[in-house]
Image 1: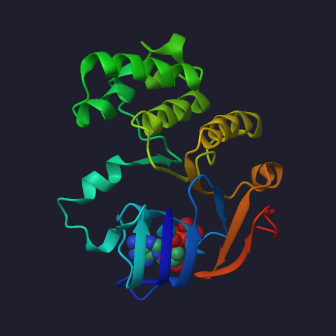
Image 2 (image 1 turned 30 degrees about the vertical axis):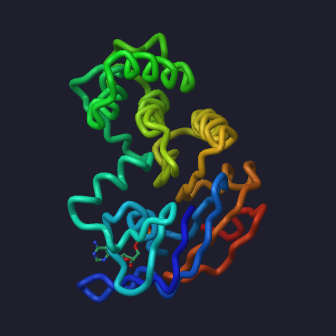
Image 3 (image 1 turned 180 degrees about the vertical axis):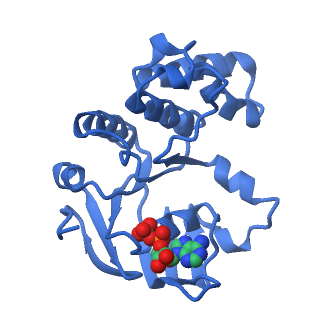
Length: 228
Ligand code: ADP
């Protein structure tokens, strides 16, 4: 699903974010990327959807050579990915329904299919009865659930989440993780950068620890593993 070989990143100002990363993630895996602030997690995540290009190395997502994609082709890669951020990134002036439906309208899905699918994913994240509300009327956890619904509505090959529980309390974070678990159990690969020690330890999934741009640990059923 994801293959990185010899990936490094040095930003223009000389900051070295990643050093010679080799990594393979198989279809259906649930992978946490952990590490202290400044370790390189966001850089790693952004490379998966070509928001950041590596200085050296190769990246393949589902067999596609990401670096070979032209600017015009990048949106097609992104449409196959479900991307979730710490700050939700919803459209405040659109309803819950429209925030999710928008992702299907972009790919010109037929209206009837859109309606059915949007209601299905809203039900999956427990927001079916809030379809006509606006994001600002909902709690942080509910807003993140909208973002998750939007990320999965087009059946992505890979879900990428950057600190998705970063703004949420522990109980709400656990609810969010239950939703991610369900998505993963239905076969979708998930890569999640997080600072959340409790969640990582509770989930018992693969943990890739990055420190100072290097993978310092890669455990199949890992724990968070250091003081942050
Ligand atoms: P993390 O997500 O683990 O906090 P980042 O990937 O954001 O780590 O950052 C890794 C390193 O790269 C840090 O030293 C950071 O200062 C630097 N960095 C990140 N983004 C940029 C950027 N756009 N320009 C310059 N340096 C950056």
